[in-house]
Structures are given as C-alpha cells and as structure tokens.
Amino acid sequence: MYSINLPRENCMLFSKQMIHNIFILILLTGCSFAQYPADSLYADPNNSVLQKIFLYPIVKWQRLSYNETNLNCQFAPSCSNYGAQTIHTHGGIKGIFMASDRIIRCNPNAFESHQKMGGQFHKDGRLFDPIKYSHTIHSTKSPIVAAGLSMVIPGLGRVYAGRPIDGFYGFLLSAMAIRAGAISVKNKNVFAPLYVGMAITFYGGEMYGAYRTAKYYQK
Image 1 (cartoon, rainbow, N blue to C red):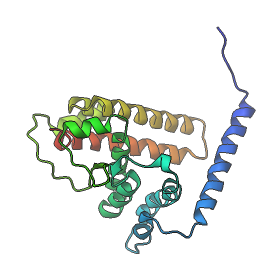
Image 2: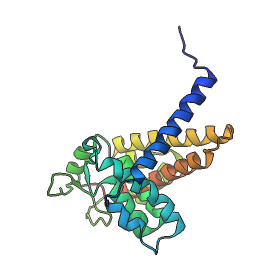
Image 3: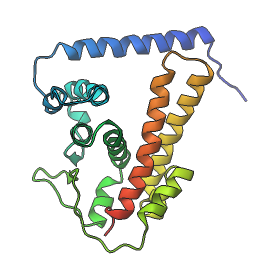
Image 4: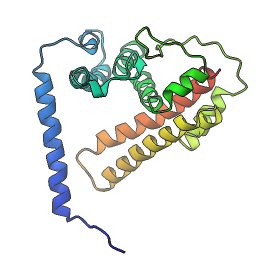
C-alpha cells in the first residue's frame, strides 16, 4: 500500500499561498463601487462591533457571489442575505447561529425537504425561507429534545426531527470545524481564534437548527 506524505515545507507554502489568494480577493472585491444588499446593513451606525465583524465577510462574499452565476443560492432570500439580515436583526450571537443553520440546510436535499413540509416558493422559483417563519405544524417532536440531541452529537437532533440529510450535513460541517479548531489550538496556529470561532458557530448553529427544525420545518 502506498501513501503520499507531503513535506512540511510544501504544506506551509500551500497555506501561505491560500492566505495570499484570499487576501488578494478581499482587496479586489473591496475596490468594487457597486452596492450590494448587505452593504446597507453593514453601514448601519447602530450595529455593534460584533455585528460589524460578522457582517464584513458577507459584504465581501456578495461581491463575488452576485457576479458569478454558479454561486446562485437556491433559497430566497439567499444565504448571504439571510445571514446579513439575521445578524442585523437578532444581534451577532443569535444571528450567526441562524446563518450557520441556513448554510447547513442549503444542501442538495433542500428542494425535496421544502416540498415535503409544504413550503412556499418565491416568484422566481427559489425556495422561500424568510427569517420570521410562521409555518403552522402539528408535530410530536420536541424542539428542546432536538436541541439537546444535537448538543450531544451534532446533527442528531435534525435526524430526530425528521431531517436526516440535514443532520448529516450538520454533523459533517460541525465535525470539520471542531477538528480544525482543535488542531489549530494544538499547533498554536495564528488563525486558531478564527477556527475556534467557526467551530463554535457551527456547533451552536446546529443546536439552534435542530430546535428550529422540530418547531417549524415539518409538514
């Protein structure tokens, strides 16, 4: 059996190149004078520092996603607009959890799940999923139990609530983020706070998403 072991120097060069490319992308997108939906929310003087920090990547992302058709979102509002609105409306902590929940739900099974629960569609055909959801259901699933299960094992609460595919993606993203955070802390990586923040975001978002799934996203 053969294995490929990349030299440590090559891994470091790859990481530096990736960081360099991201930095260049931010500079290029920052030079755009076009206005995007998240811009006005970011410019609100009433935003807290935490809201500004969380909104900034969304502002930059929209400069890329709005100019690339392959990045069109299947939801309305799009994940970036949904995230910007939740952070602006509900504050940094709850808003970022709601945004990460939406990212988890934006998977290849979203259309089928949306149909099963009797969800509405936007006039352009996208899946209508507003921040304030008022879908009335008669469910035997407990939102508290769902959130508790996802606290123990990310994704399990969504499985309990009837969304196994969402649960799989929730587990996958949470596990990847937690692992990246743990490794970065162990290696004393300069980006450790960023990775740990992502881990907390997806873990918290998974618990929130499980709660919301049991409460709203069923038929």
